[in-house]
Length: 66
Image 1 (cartoon, rainbow, N blue to C red):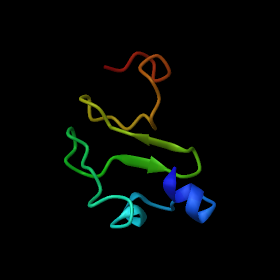
Image 2: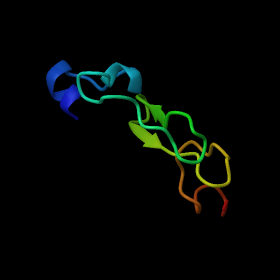
Image 3: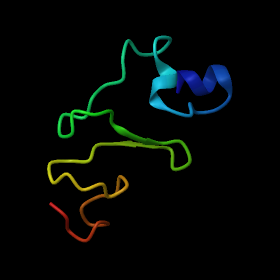
Image 4: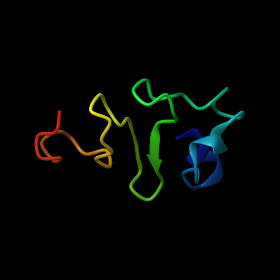
């Protein structure tokens, strides 16, 4: 939100927040890669324990994925 306040828009990527807003991009504990981010969808999410990229949907939206 600080980036949006200062620049007038969300960042294109999480890496765009380093080093001004973050020391480093935080890794998803399930994938050991950067959390998933979509500027268009305004969402930051984890793949989760099942390793399936459901686009940040909830279990109910993903058809009960676990």
